[in-house]
Length: 71
Image 1 (tube, one colour):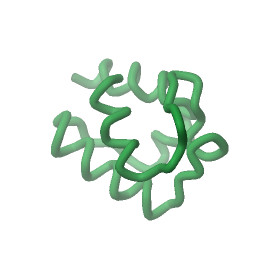
Image 2: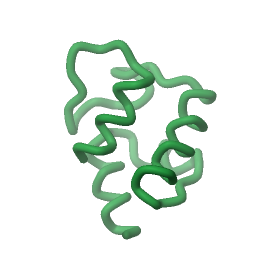
Image 3: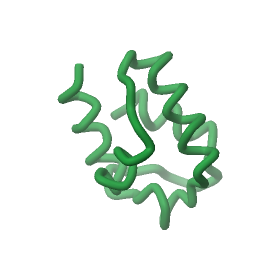
């Protein structure tokens, strides 16, 4: 989750990103942000995601678990 949070911090201006933070409501990610984050995750973590993965996994914690399951 730590690497995911580091990536997200480049795109959002919030005081804290937690496992319970939602991508849409708490972090306010746009579709463009999501596409950029997908590219960054592929480069930094080596996992390919789709935009729909951010719909299915609504929180940072859920996405971190999903990414871990793909490794």
